[in-house]
Image (cartoon, rainbow, N blue to C red; front, side, top):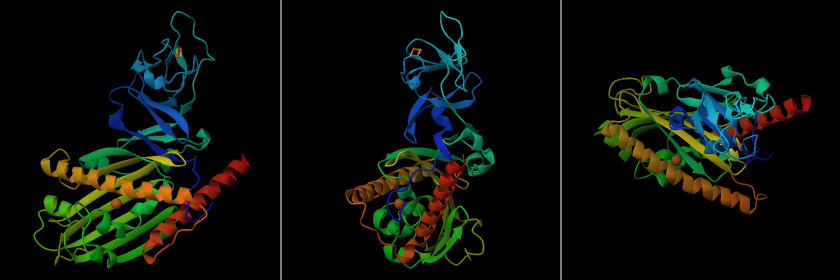
Length: 350
Ligand code: FES
Ligand SMILES: [Fe+2]
C-alpha cells in the first residue's frame, strides 16, 4: 500500500455492475474485479449476475440469450437461473452438479449492485441511498477508463482542475476556482467537502440551462464513500440571494450526480455516472444539452486520468505531491487505506 500510487482492489464491497436500463436487451458481459461476469434478467425479470463462463464447454454465457426462464447458453442450450443452477439440459436429464458461480445482486434506484467479495458479508444495508434516481429525471452513462479506480476519486475530490480542463462546459474561471472557500471533512468511510465560489461567473453549461444573466453563488458539495463512489450536489443561485443559507430556493440550478468506479482490473475501471437536474426532464432539450456537456467534460477528464496512469506506471517509485487543495484527496486515500486494511484483517481471520 502506498500513498499516491495505484490502490489495491477491495473485494468486499458493492459495485455497480450495470444501470438497470442496460439489461433491457438481453445479457451483457462485463469484466469486474479481474473476473468475467454476465448480468441479465431471469424469467421473473429479476436482475442476476453469474460467472461469464458456461460450465459445459467454457464459452461466455453473455453470447447467449434470456429465454426459457433463465439465461440460455448460446452454444448447446443449457439454461441457468439467477442462482447459477442449470434448469434445462436439452435432450438429457437435469444434473444437480451442473452450475455456475452466482454473485449477490441487488437492484435498487436504477442501480444493479453486485457484491464481489465473500457472499457471507453481502449486507444490502451497506448500499448507498440515492433517491434522486427515483424522484428526478436522470441520465445514465458509462465510460471505459484505462486507469486505477482511485484516480477517479483524485479527479473528483480536487475541483481546481475544472477551470483548466472544462472551460467550455462546466468549468468556469480558474482563478475563481482557486480562490473558492473550501471546507473539508474526514468521514468514517470517506471524505466530504463543501466549496463555495461566491459572486462568480456561471460556466457556459450553467448559463445555458439556468438562464443566468448575473454572477452566481456556486456550490460544490462532494462526498467520497469508499471504495468507489462519489456523490455530488452542485449548483448555483444568482448572487444576492443568500445562497449559503438556502440552496433549495427557486431560481436555483441544482444538480445531482452519482459517480462510481467499478474496477475491471488494477489498471482499468468502468466509470458509471448519472446526472439529474431538479425540475428538469432529462429528455428535454435543456436536459439533453446539459448531459451532452457532461459527456464532453468526462471525456476531458478521461484524457487526464489516463495520463496520470501512464505517468505513475512509468515509474511507480516516484512520489506525487499533495497541494493544499488536495486535502479531500488525502482524506479519501486514508479512507481507502483503512478499508483495505480491514479487508486484509478479515481475510486473515477467515
Ligand atoms: S458450452 Fe454452454 S451449453 Fe455447451
Ligand atoms: Fe473533471
